[in-house]
Every structure is written in structure tokens, then in C-alpha cells.
Length: 561
Ligand code: NOJ
Image (tube, rainbow, N blue to C red):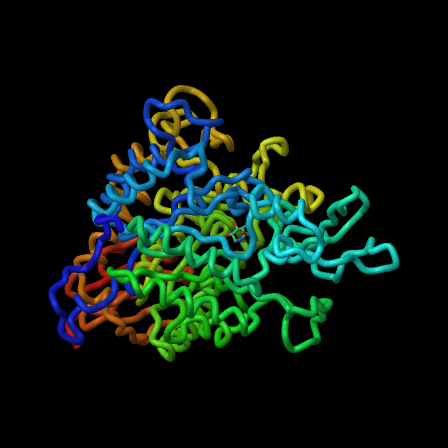
């Protein structure tokens, strides 16, 4: 086992002592999308894409930002049919990103800087380039090789209709037919995403053993946890019945059998020192079903998609915060606060629209957007998400105030959603454009030289580079750096206590710990601040005389209760 594990100090902690609190209860986790984070200095970037050398060269940036952990989107070898969520080998590194040796060095270097490492594990489906799938195609129907995936005969006399009516997440049927042994049309296999992402059969013992071994492989290398992709989809109805919206149980979403998988995974994680964490991508409409994944002995946290989806509206945010805290308290799990990720429209853009409600990526592209207003609200939202009890996530570029790149040329779009939807939905490329680091023109220091990035950056990002924002105390980056410093310094942010304080309807106001009060003004007029001793952080200057402007957030030190 690696000696790079970043473990808590071994000293015994008394109950209630903050040292006894696992790190993942209050961590700030930064999401790195390797392809778009940074390219290594002095290396030709493969097709203008980022790599592990780039991440290593920017670890100091992450440490200075003040994050506790980094979650990497899949970094494994992949034909990139779905940007790495089609994994060809779970125990290696995508060659255009680097090598396993570099990944091990990266883990060690991050740990030295006090940053933990979370990997993305993709258990619902693999890549069609994976040796198991190649072997399954070469094997006969009914063979053990095919049983690791979900192969079925088609319907109809010639078997030329898919086995059931399930649809792929990206459009079209969730089944693809493969040739039989003599080249004649044969069985169909299931893929809830693209045809290049065949679903595994979680009823198969090889599959369960394989993933348990994959977890150990990376835990042995010092990794601190996993984000579990499509965590609610693994178990399928063995009868493969048609999806019927009126039936009580869904044939593949959130079936009870899936919980046994996570109980097994949790006992593996708990077998390692240093509080390893399992984070579920659990996107369900029902909060009670969601928190079942957080029962003792299962996952420690899940992403809060209700918060991510919430419009810029005080009543709706209050309701989401209350429901989240109530449901998580019941199972003693920390809440998480997520404003954006690699699958959704950047929040600066959404908050700058007349209708700030959630939008599937690429659906409402081109709606008029006031980026100044969106940025102002995103600054206030940062102070909101970083002040609520639990774990906060920052998707790379959020700390720079990047907006969605809505005007990519059609030929530049790479998200399978674009092609699979018959070019109806533009897809998620607009939130995946490489980060601007320095200089006045693309590629903004992302790669050495002038080579364009794999998705072109807008030249209007010149003021949003890390270099430009570092020199500007009023920038989004300066706000994030400062807020994270304050969050780490104030014990009130690492306790569970949270209480609403009286405030006008369009204002959120709550107390954290004994002496911190947070106020977020979502109304269109200034509101008076509560009596306070000190302003700890503000997303805009507070009005002389003590009132908070519209679309502004503030952290106050208030008199201890
Ligand atoms: C969720 C991931 O976040 C998304 O990017 C991916 O396309 C699907 N799962 C399929 O793996």
C-alpha cells in the first residue's frame, strides 16, 4: 500500500472534538475535468487537451485557492465516446493524459499540499473497447462472457425489434443489435447511454468482484474516495419488462437491489485508514429515496441536485435548504451544496436569464443573458453554498466566473448528446471549454504556444484568466480565495448548527455556529443588515450605513448567542 495516504493525525480524539469529525463532512471539493483543466508546461498538448502534467503543474493553484479535495472526472483509457465515461481499462490512465506513474506522483504531491483525491468510478457501463466486451461479442449467446453484460434476443419473429421499450439517456433506443456467430443478425445488448457504453450485468459475480478489486487498486494507491457515476442505475429488472410510467417500481432506476452493492463497497472503504469516502451521483426526484443511499453502512454523501437545479429565488432556495437539512439530519449524513458541474449549464449564464430555472444543457441556449447580473448572483451564490453546513463543490472555472460558451460552431461540438439527439440538443460542450490561465488571447496559457484548445475559448475571457483575476481584489477568484480562507478559519463553518433568522421574504438569513450570520439578499432593493461586530466576507461592497445591496451575500460576525 502507498505511504502517501493523507490520514488524520493518529491522536485519539474525544467525542465532540472537531478532530474526530471526518474530513468529508465539511470539505470543499474542487472538480477537475482533466481535458479542460491545464496542459503540462513544455509538452505539446494532445489535440489542445489537458493532461496530468498540467494538473501537477497547477496543484499549487488549488492549494492557494484553499480546497480540501479534488474530484477527477474519469482519467482512465477511453475512446472518448462520452468524454471518458466510456472506460476501457479501470486500472490505467488515458494515454493522452499521462501514465499511472504520473498519477501516483500526482496523488503524492496533492497529499503533500493537504489536498485529497477523489476518483470517478463508472460502474453502470464500460466501453465497447473494453476486453470483456470484445470477448462477449466473440462468444456465443448464453456464454459466461455475455453474461457480464446484458444481451437479449430481440422481439418479433425475426428478433428485429429491441427486447423492450427502454430509451437511451442521449436519445434513441437503449439497445443495439450485434451479429450472430455466422454474421447473421443476432442478440441485442443494453446501453442506457451511447452504444459505445454497454451496461454491465450487476447480477453477475464477475462484475461485482471486478469493481471491488478496482476500488482496492486505487485505494491502495492512496486515493481518498470515489464519486460513483450513475449510481442509481446499476440494478435492472431481471424480467427486462417494458418501462411503464404507471408501474410502482422502475425497471432500472433506483431498484432496491443496488443498495447491496454499496454496502459491500463501504466495507471495503472502511477497511482502509484515513476516512475514505463514497459519493453518489444520486439524481432522484424523491428526497426520501435519495437518503436511503446514506443509511449507515452505505454512501457517506450524495450530490444535492435539488440545490443545483434551484432558481435564483429565495422561497425556493429556502425550501430546498430546509428539505435537504431535514432529510440528511435524519440519517446523520452531511448535506452537499453544488452549483454546477460538467453536465449542466454554467450558473453565471443561468442566473443572468430572465428565467433562472434549471435548464438541460444545450436546451435553452441563446436566451438573452445579462452576464453582469449573472456574475453578481453567482458571487452571492458562492457565499451561500460555502456557508451552508456540509460539503461544498466547485466545478473548475466556477471560481473564475466563467460563463457557458453558447456560440460554439457545430463542427466543434463533441458531446454525444448533440449527434444522438439528431442535433436537436447542443449538449454539454459549452461548460467544458478549457480554462483560461494567462495572457490576452486564446489559448490563454492553457497550452504552450498558440495551438487552439480542443474546444475553442472565447476571446472575451481575457479578463477572466487566473492571471488577470489574481491581480484584481474584486474578482471572482479573489472572492473564492478569501471566502475559503474565512471558512477554514471560522469554527462556525465546521459544526452542524444552523438556524434561520427572521428576514424579509426575499432574503435568506441564518446563523451558523455561535457567532456567524449569513445574509443573502435576492430582492431588488437594499436590506438592512442585522447588528454585527464585523463583516467577514461580502460579495459586493456593503452600502454605507449598513445595508446589503440586491443580489448580494454577506458573512457577519454577530454577538455569540
Ligand atoms: C453522468 C456523468 O456525469 C455524465 O457526464 C455521463 O455522460 C453519464 N453519467 C454517463 O456516464
